Image (cartoon, rainbow, N blue to C red):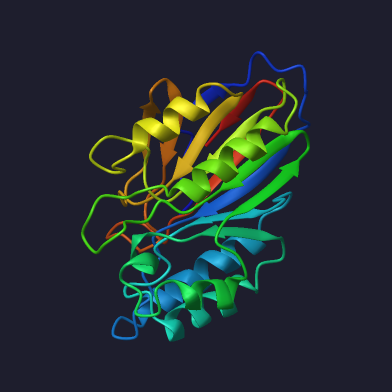
Length: 238
């Protein structure tokens, strides 16, 4: 089930006029060999996204597996590779300190731990917010903060940026959230996209708009869940 319209976010203050485009988001899939229906649910979501017109890419925002195990991540990649458009992925807490490989399997399977791309004048930056130990708060490591600053410094000031993480950048979720938001506020960051709560939320991270999306796991009265974003010259709609 696609999420209905939740929010309209103005991209004012930018002289870069993005053309109209759409992208999808999938999050909190939690593949588990003991719960085979979750694989079926992901397959269903991929098929539904493939049936849509004018989807330019897909963002996948973490917790791909329950245990961060290699077989589950390989199966997830097999299904993601069926998408007819490019996809960009960040890990969640279940891929960091739940992982027996210490995240090495993730990079081996997906090829990167952070991403950057530009689409029609909008920059997208995705990075890890996973905890330093199991059941701890999320954390953005110094290397990722330095990378984030370096990439943001490289963009023209008027070009909008969308940040992609798993955790919300809030107190009680990420222990150094203030370091991240203090950095982002100096740039033209228009939206932060994430998951983790298994519910669709409209939030504010020190004044920066934030959206969390429901889990892909099928709910009682609905199908599987994904988000569909529409970007126009002056707004972002979910």
